[in-house]
Image 1 (cartoon, one colour):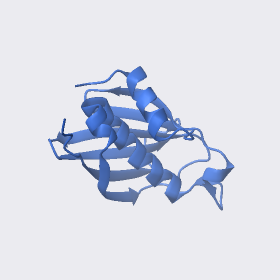
Image 2 (image 1 turned 180 degrees about the vertical axis):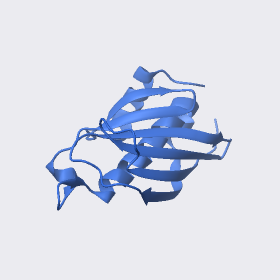
Image 3 (image 1 turned 90 degrees about the horizontal axis):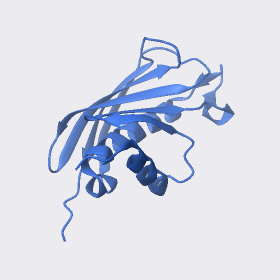
Length: 137
């Protein structure tokens, strides 16, 4: 079951009603989100903080999973997240792009690349595994 972008946005808002992140695209085991940066996302030196980047990594992978799995994906949880910070992000919007590499019945494994808006070089690279619960009727 694949969900439309509009359906994914609705599900995301239920799970994270206070999030300021914007879902830009979903589909074909991929998702793209944008975090409009503001002062609470910055660390000294006016760069996006590591916790903000990790949050976006986790969120965009969850969005990619719910787009593919629907309600079952809504109840999925992170089981592993590894991040490599590659470049200092600029003070500006953070773009997160997820790709699901393997989507099984119980696990989803994917990669996430984070970018500063307008830059082609990633600022971080992550691998993420999610546990997907079995939904019993």
